[in-house]
Structure formats: C-alpha cells, structure tokens
Picture 1 (cartoon, rainbow, N blue to C red):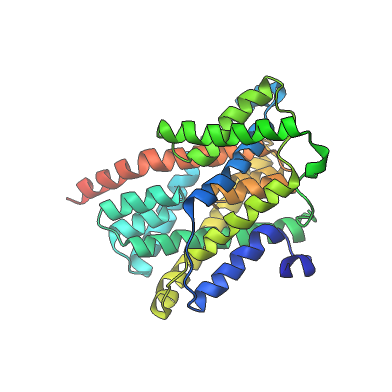
Picture 2: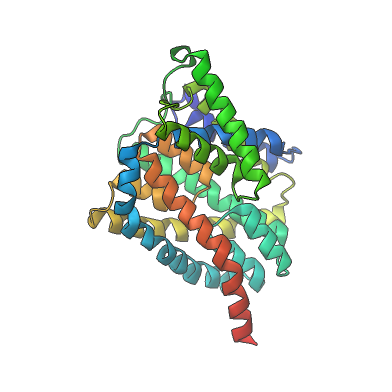
Length: 326
C-alpha cells in the first residue's frame, strides 16, 4: 500500500520485499511456507506458457546467438566474482565459488554446503544479489525508459470465463506436480510453463492469468527475498550484506555490458536484453518481463539457459579447480 501510494514501481513485488527485509533487520522472526510460495510460482509459469504461439516458437532459432552469450556471461561473472569474494571479502573457497555463480539459490546452497561452504553466508549472499538486481532494474526501466511498472499486469478476472480460469488452474497445479514427480528443477515454474505452453499452442489457452492472480503471486514471491534475512546479526550485516552488495554491483555492471552488446548486435531490444541478462531470481525477472511488456519468452529462455548451465557445470568446474590446486 505504501509503494502504491508513492507510485513506486512494482508495488506488489517490491513493497512486500522491502517490508519483510526491514522487519528481518529489526529482529522479527520470519519464515516462508514453501508450498504456498511454489503455488504462487505456478501462476508465473502459466503466464509464460500462455505467451507461447507458433510465431514465437518460430523465433527461437533467432535467439540462438544471443543464448550462446549465456555461458560467456557466466564465465565472466565467475572470473570477476570469485576473486572479489575470496581475496577481498575473505570467504573460504567453496563459499566464494558457489556465491559467485548467479544460479538457482537452492542448488548453489546444496552444492556449496556439500563442498564444505558456509550455508548461511551463501544464502545471504545470493539473497543480496537478488535484492540488489530487483531494486536496480525497476529503477532503470522507470527512470531511463519511462516504463510504467505500477499498472495492472493484464486484464481483470471479470474479463475471463470460468472455464478458462479452471483450465489455467489445472495447468498450473498439474504441471507443477508432474514436474516435481520427474525431478525437474524449478518444477513450480517450469512444469506449469511447459503444460500451459502446450495448451496455448493447441489453442486451448489464449490469455495469460488475470492481473489479480499475477499480483497475488508477486506479493508472496516478493516477501520470500526479504524473509531470507530473518535472524541476521550485525556482524553478518557488516560482513556478508556489504560483501553481497559489492558482488551484486559487479554482476550488474557485467550484465549491463552484455545487454548493451546484444542490443548493438541487433539481437534484441534494449528492454529485452536488460531483463534477459540481469542475474536476479527467475521468478522476479519473469514478473518484471510481464509487467514491463517485454518479450517474456526471450527473457525466460535466457534465464533458463543461465540456470541450467550453472547447475550442470558449477560442480564440475569446482572439482576441476580443486584438482588443479592439488
């Protein structure tokens, strides 16, 4: 309500995020209900899937060159981020390495902890990266591009028939559970996205979920970022939070260079390039793409590529580097 009253961007996402962050820094005990958060993510998955069409599928080959830059972006991010976190900030090697990888939070926590890293530091460093990116990007889109991020992200629920809403709900829940059963990473988003995409290509789904559903999803997803700071101590604020902000700025600068390169090569619009290469959370960047009116398919494909590469390659690279040191 405060963000809306002040006409600040993405009030349903950033308002709850900063309120939860402020409460956590004040020492309020906060926790997330994973089932509810995942259920909210299914709305975004359906929204992305519903955006698919035969015309958009035909554009996928043209994204190939842009997608090729994803691994290069990760290499540059790692080469810049690891020395900063290891040498300047003083974190141990596993923590610095997996914190430098802008990939899936849960996966990086699991890999880092298994390698002997500090799980608490990893969680706060990744949360700070996401926090900084989802703060900077809306400011850029609003101030530099004049994009209104305060409006409704679609049509109201009254514009939909009950049958269409039911199909979307079933696609979201069924896609989530099926993807979860087969062990697909990011099941709560990718499962609904795949199923809703198939239904959209078949002409069964023709619209994204209503604005109210996307706003509710933003509300709960925004809180999750702030809640990760629950229980943070002043010592952690001084060391981890400040280190995370510095790392986030390094990643933001690298992302800006890659986005500009993609734009100059004519591979995407400036808006799409910024959202595609900004290393925020997948859910948060999907929300921004929807609200900003960007090419959601283009943006999501690049974030999927980033996360898949990090999850599959990071542990292998870490072991190789450890062997090289030995």
